[in-house]
Length: 75
Image (cartoon, rainbow, N blue to C red; front, side, top):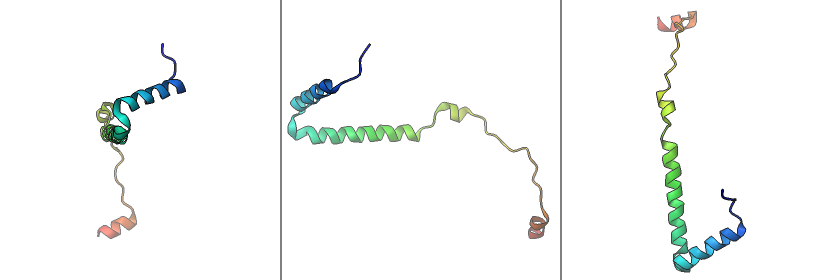
């Protein structure tokens, strides 16, 4: 449906942004966009998917054995 964005399209978008916001506001807009992207990424990393939460916890069915060294330490 859509082709990939090429260099002419990127230049056109940048020119429209420059006209809309002006040269003075451009650094503030970039900073706000960067903060928003950083917050979005950190919020994604903090949450765990539902599949991981629903997974059963594996427990060991193996009985604990004591060796002579650990038995001597306990006594």
